[in-house]
Amino acid sequence: MSNIANIRSNIDIIEEAYEFMLAYAAQGRMDEGAGPDGAHIRTFVARFADAAAAMAPRIVQLIDGETVDGIALRDSFQRDSETVVAVLRLLLSRQNMTSEMIDNTNGLIVMRSYLTTLFFIDKVLIPAQTDPAK
Image 1 (spheres, helix red, strand yellow):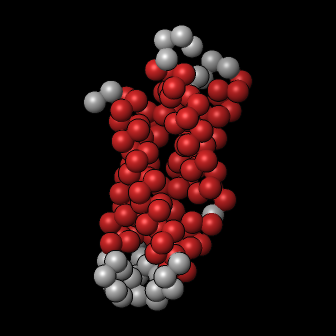
Image 2 (cartoon, rainbow, N blue to C red; image 1 turned 90 degrees about the vertical axis):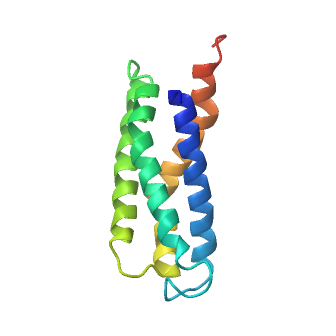
């Protein structure tokens, strides 16, 4: 699998996990195991963390580190990636993930920064890498 294909595959995993996290947060669960989807939250959080950790070095390589703008974007994305993975792993270390815990995770500025930068990279930087005319 190429670097771009690997990145896109991990982006798909992250999008799916984040959508599940949004739905879970809205359910008002006090107990992770309550209801048919409760136990799945842990799986989705783990997949998000694993995909983010695996993808970060690939994206860092993709971002142009030769320009001031590229360096700033690369460094910001790398910090956000490390923080998001740490937050998700902290969640996974808890005995129980409530909807409120997931809602607070979803609302973190670093989570939003990470996701919007990731989607920018997917829609702006990756096409520039794959289009020979650029």
